[in-house]
Length: 493
Image (cartoon, rainbow, N blue to C red; front, side, top):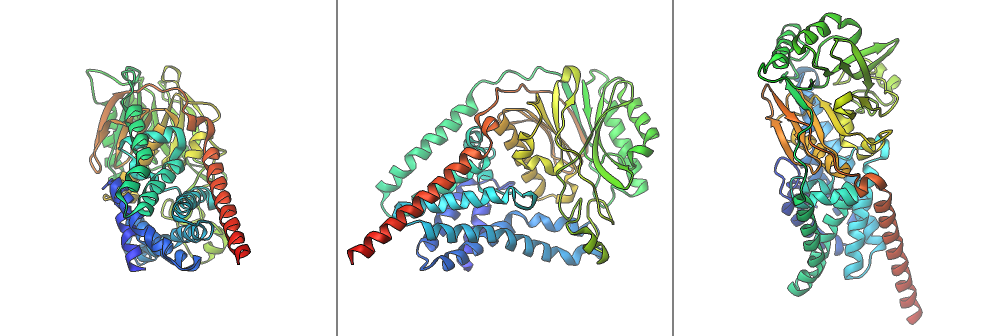
């Protein structure tokens, strides 16, 4: 068990900011013999759980950061949050190890079952209870050539290929000839990723967008005196650049410390700084008893011309499951203070920005869901994420969030523009390359032309269904194969 947990930590080194996919492959290959040698499925499940605990504790340790924004009040909960999150997500992997051990048989059958079952539960983790597809195994390839394969098979397909590569290599050990033979197809896939990433993209000569990064520390963000300083800083960045003005200015999530219905003076000041340049910014608003985490478009006349309400909310951060029960216990929300938090908007919507084209807005957490991007009512020209990653600390969380934004761009063949309060703000092309960015925890602004879109990718057209179907077929086929083998053995006796 401790050895399996250690291998899980090794596998976690593939995730940002370390970003060593070879460590992920090594961790998976090393834990595979422990799984394969387990006497029963129950033993395999415990190995999978320990491996998952090590992996998720190492990748998701940033989850403690929100509890230290108000450490005196919430700090005591931090270790419990990490323990329950790591242990809870590890249950998915325990199930995968047990399932693979049950249906797989033989040297190669068990390796394929291992990869298919683990990928299937990663798919389930992306959807069950609103989903949390953070730190999927395939995310280890962000920034590397195989990332481009997500345009064909998506993040779960990329996870399946990663686990399959490691499992087959481990199953082939100690024969180097067998290892070379089983790895040849993966070398070819790596080459496909290199080729795809090297294909020519048109120069980004479109309209120029400006990303504003005020760098408002979370523990100071809502303090009245500091909030005004952060607002003035953002205004200065908005007005800067007399030699050339952008076509659009983008501020991050919850950019101003007042509700939309009380923001008339604040919006006038933003318009005064922007001039005739439209501004997109995040703001909170209320409607009756409901509160919303929203995005507005402030047009060239200083009027609110469009509005989008976030609809995929963060459990326990923006809304409280079983809110009435937990409200009586005095439980609070990190994102919005006390109460029941935000209400969900109606769903994905498009912003029509004239010469800037059609854009799909995503507020913070929504960009981690491929299905949310795919749910756009029509294909946008580009993707826009506004976020406040100050909650995630300065070690891993913001970089993992950025990595997922890059993967969304590859999956859809669309550029992604990302404005983050404390960073990392970035302009990302349709192959996931960061063209312009602002470093984490630095205030500033950057102008960049919008990169061009690519034609719709295979994954953009199909989503997760083909990969999900393949995984089910593989596991059912392996189960039938094992059942037939058992029947043949029984008959021979």
